Structures are given as structure tokens and as C-alpha cells.
Image 1 (cartoon, rainbow, N blue to C red):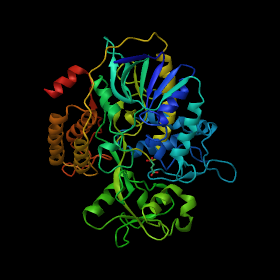
Image 2 (image 1 turned 180 degrees about the horizontal axis):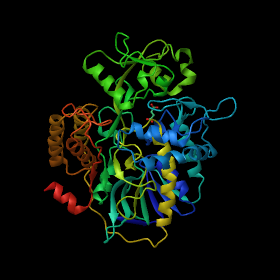
Image 3 (image 1 turned 90 degrees about the vertical axis):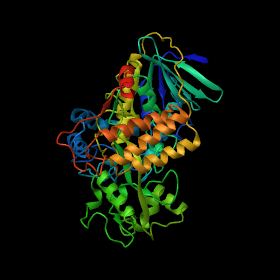
Image 4 (image 1 turned 60 degrees about the horizontal axis):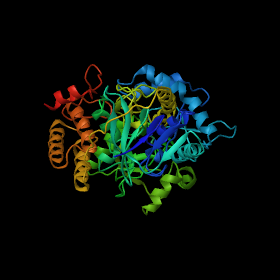
Length: 504
Ligand code: SIN
């Protein structure tokens, strides 16, 4: 196998988290790999809402932290939430200084939107619903101009490499001309989430938990993999992935109704702005009962739609639907993974040399239910902390690494089956029988395909969902429909001895 020695951090992923880390690693030479050209493969570019931060008059990081803790259903690390929200205003200023064109009011202050479970308008937005693409574009421009960065936009993670002491010291990546072992002084995983494991998702379908699975196989602990956030208003027009109708529409007064125009969540003005898991279950139920679910923005947004929410408007028009004149058909879809590789605010995992940041990491700030638009904030704020930590870690000599075992690729047919079973049994509403059935099917897929990374990730998630015999946040089980008296995390050890014990 070809070998490349890189004297500095290797960053796997070119979304908001990866590029924030890469820029912050300066002046240390840093290698960034992405499976596709930047901006194309990452969920950050698709984010519509914006960056949650206490930038409005009368708001404060402590209030933002309190909302974050309340949304997380007992599993948010309060101190970590304080760190994140305290970073908020400076992070928005930093992104703005790189050229992210945040919307401003007449006085030049950031214009903010309201989204679900925020006690006030707090989401710094760009062009109404274009925050993800605009913010990431600014970072891509900065990254391309940064002399300390080398960008490889055709390299996909296959496995992590470790030295004899168990320290991560590189990765095998697939490039068009074959696999390459890249040794580096630290590895930062910024590989995104797991939306592509589900048949209904709002994220790029290529995101299938590969970083999560590779980290666990390399010995890293995984936290709360059962917690998947389903967005209640994916546009239901038969597309894969499903376009998003941002929550900010409901912040503007758009209402969720059934096929007869009756409110899904009650008539109160803010009923549709309850926590995302509550709203997703109401939309799911309406579908299951054959009532249909629609987002009616005709009165609240109406003629302003093309200027106020251009991305949603374009998706609707492309599907032959004019949201100024008709309600938008919606359904829940896998949107964000709260669980992930256990990591600190500086990305440090339980394995020396390995860092994780962004959606593939679980830093304790999302608990069982992420507060809307906290993910872009986390990606940028903790991305910068992680880049600095990884660059400092990288000050030693480049270690040598043996070639690790490479996982098999998952065939197209098996992937399609996996996505169906995940949506059916690991979706908005779960139960023990469905989860057992899903595990049995995963076993059959493993027998035919081997332990491909998406199967490893899916198994981690389903086993944790089966073991969590309660309902909490985004994890809802009809056979255990109440929360347990004490909120507890799931921690799955990646140490080889523990993994073997679990498999025995
Ligand atoms: C949205 O705009 O509704 C999504 C925002 C988020 O997922 O944080």
C-alpha cells in the first residue's frame, strides 16, 4: 500500500467542523481530506436555520445555555453547554470576519430568527434560509487561501491506523488510484452524521456513520448512539434525500395542519414551536393515522416566500408546488445524530492521538434532543478548539503505523435494505420487537457482507436503543413510554477487550 507521511494533523472531513479545525490549526501544516469537492458532501452546507448565539439585545449566553439544557431532556452536560454558548457571540463574529454575510437589521446588528424550544429569537441567519451554504462558502474560500492547508477532495476514510501502544497515528483513505496509508501526528474526525443510514433523511445520503464506526473499531468510546433527531418538516415529495422546510418558517407563524386543515399540535400560537421530538411525533402520528401532515405558510409568509425563504421556495417550486398557494406536504426524516464519538470541547476522545468534532462527536451539549441551530455553533466553536488542540498535539515526530485491517464495502442492495430497516425500526417511534427484528436483519447483512462500517454504526445505534428501556427526548419507545427516574448516558467502550466481551 502507498504511504504518505504528513508532519501535522490530518483532518477527515471538509464541512464546517473540519474546516474550522483546519483554519485554527495554523500555522501547523494540516492535511484535510474530503470524499468530494468541498461544499458538495457536507450536511453543513444544507443547514437552513443558522447559528444559534446570544447576539441579540437582552439575550445572554446563560439564557441560551438554559434553553440548551432544557431541550436535552436531562442529558446535557451543563458546564459544556455553558462553554458552547459563551463561545457563541465570538464565533458568529469570527464567521462574519471570514465573510459569512449574516443578515443585519437597519442598525447593522445581526438579524435573528426564532426556532423551536428557544425562549427567544436567537438564530443568526443568512439570506433567510441560506446560512449553511453561505457560512461554509466563506470557510472554503479562507481554507483555499491558507498556506498551511493542503486539501485533498477525493479521499474517503477506510480505517484508522494505530501504533503499537494503541495511539491513533494516521488513517487509510481510499483515493481514485487506490488506498493510501497517511501517517500523521494527530487525526481529527469531522466526518458528519448518520442520515444516510435511513431511507428518509434530510442529509447527504453518503453520510453513514463511517467516522463513528472507524473510531469505535480503533478503541474510542461512543456516547448515546441511540439518540437520532428527526426533523418534523422534511418536504414529502418523494425525493431522496428529502429537502428541508426550515423550522424558522414556524418561527414566522407557519402552522402544521392535517389534510383537513386542522392544527396538528393544538391552536395555541406557539404550539408548533415545541421541542423537535414532540413535533416530529405529532407529524409521524398524523401520517400513521392517514390524516396527512402539511406546513401551511400561506398566511404567515405568503407572497414574501421567494425572498424570505429562497431555498425552501426553490425546493417546492422544483417539486411543482407553490407554497404561497398551497400547504407543503411534510414528514419526519433523520436529520442529526446527537450521539457519537465521546469527545471533549477540544475534540479529545478516549484514544490518544484521535480527535472528533461536529456531528460525528458527542460532546455532551445536545443530550437527548439538540436545540435547533446549536449544531453549526458547535461545529465552528468546538472546531476551532479542536484544531488548536490537535495542532499542539502534533508537535512531536510523526510516528510509524502498521496497515490496519480494512473493512469491507457495503453493496448497494444491502445498503438499501439497511436504510429501510433503520427507518422502519429505528425511526421516530420504536419498540423492543422492532429493534430485535432490526438486529436480526443486521446480523444477516453482516453474514453476507462482513462488518462494513455502516453496519457497525447501525448495530451500535440499535443495540443502545434496545438497552434504553425508557423514552427520553428523541428516543421514544411505545413499550417504555415514560422517562426513567434517573437520566443516564449510554457509553459503549471501544476497547478491544470490551468489544470482544460484548460480541461473545
Ligand atoms: C432548521 O432550520 O429547521 C434546521 C436547523 C437545525 O437543524 O438546527
